[in-house]
Image (cartoon, rainbow, N blue to C red):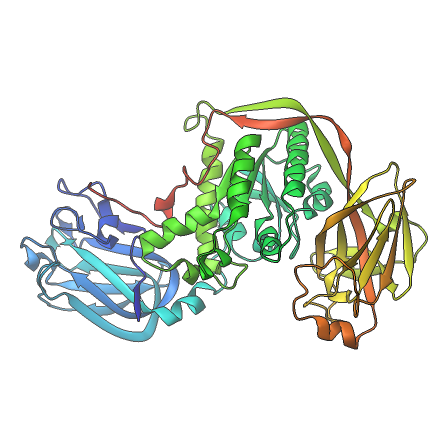
Length: 536
């Protein structure tokens, strides 16, 4: 099975003629023709047209469709070049060839059998003439798309790029991978700090927010949706907790004059069994009610699927992540949306308001505040943290300045294979054994929310490690399916970095963005990655 990887991709041509349509060069990659041709240059010596496939694909064949209403001789001296970097070109065809019109005739097909790879395909003629074709198609085997699109980015941002808008990122694994974050720096967005960690719930935001403080940023990207969606799939409902954290972010942004943007990264769960996802709809309504801009990744994927004529599932690397190429495309469109959010010409009615509301503050308490336990230092190239390493029966006490509610645990998932009994005003046993337990791995840092938060008593909380095997009454976690083998073959161990707590409600100023469409996906510049034109 073949896929036309040139469909609705950006295209360029050497000149325009008086007959050129609004589609310009991109008319040559569309699903339909405009007038009698897809693109049309002016009369010039050796005119050219090329398409940017935006990814390096193994090419099975290139198919050229001539214009419909005659003048087919203008393309008789056709040449085809390919390139991976737009600097060095390889000629793969040159010669006299006659092929008929695009609708009813026989196109010119150049078979390549996947033996060459290219990101750019250029067609030209060796005469001084008008150059016009009805359509250019570049086919790759569908089974090869996943490998090609999950390759690391081949290019780095040029040193001279103008990075005009400073942003911070609070995200999970989507923000760590070389995907949309790589595209931000390619599109004049300056990432001042990426404080992202692994497979965490939204409660990682209060824990990592302190890393952003002191950084001069204009926008804060919040990317927490994927793991909350995973939790929902396993029967957990953290929506009220999410709502409270968004309020808290609103107060932080009001304090530092920062615009938050909620990024709803898509998941493959939505498309595997045509599931109706409740969380993205609820999150969109939440953003609208709280007047916070958001970018709907599911809407992005559905638009891309329609334009490129591909199933949505083909855009994903696994259930949790887009493939690297499509994530970069999303980042390109998100960058344009953020830039236009700050362009007063494009958004003359944008207003940033602040209002006082009753909300809860969230904060992170590290275990080193307890002073009664020797700590273990874990380090990677990106992180260095201290953990209380608790084995079966060992306990830890954390004192607080006021009575608070524990809503999440910050743990080292790689070194945790037990459960915690949390006691304060109430008691909860949280099972923490997981699929990623690996005694050979130093650090896999996550925050996991509690479905049943625990209130402190007399400004004190205790945590005791117990075995997770044969627990009769406990609260499970959404990363444990299939981990029973670990629980039964290893001694109980938990590495706890700290806790995330919720304080009593108080009056705080929160930020509100008004005067614009909060759905940044509606204003997204899809033509940067998937140009589409219709004459209707």
